[in-house]
Image 1 (cartoon, rainbow, N blue to C red):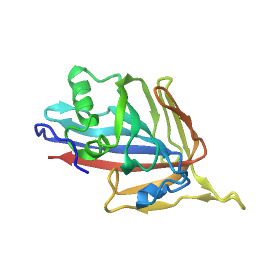
Image 2: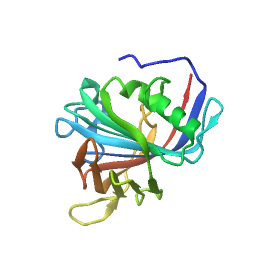
Image 3: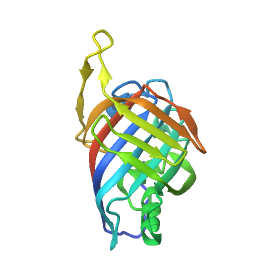
Image 4: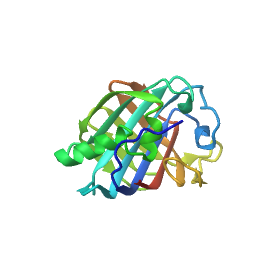
Length: 206
């Protein structure tokens, strides 16, 4: 699979990533296995602590991509929406759109080969980042609340972590559950109670 590329622009982002999908806890896709239920319906939210695209600062902004694929991600045929921080000015919005549309590498340069965007637009982001107690609301389109995994017998909390040296979106993550995960937009689903995770991320190119 070849990533889409355009004229090279130096860019770098780092911050916190929230992940949720319809898979069971841990998500087998993280380990190159098929999705738990045959298809993948999930997404990512990135909050940028520090970021630049060329000379444009992206500090403090958030962006997200939500998708549905009929099978595993790499098999393609998916649909997606991207929502980005409505506080972005014109230059910041252009930078974010250039990234999520896959023309400058990073994870989006790979994912763009697997779906077609139904919409890319600004939206309001309400994020509370607190490990596995994190919450997110994006306009009227997305609600996500993370939770710890509970032992089904004792109710005790479990806080597993995954190390992914070859990971595409992150290299390590705290694994949890979603007490709420709903998307209601050009794509729609409710996978509350399934896989969720939080992770640091750091990307750069070229």
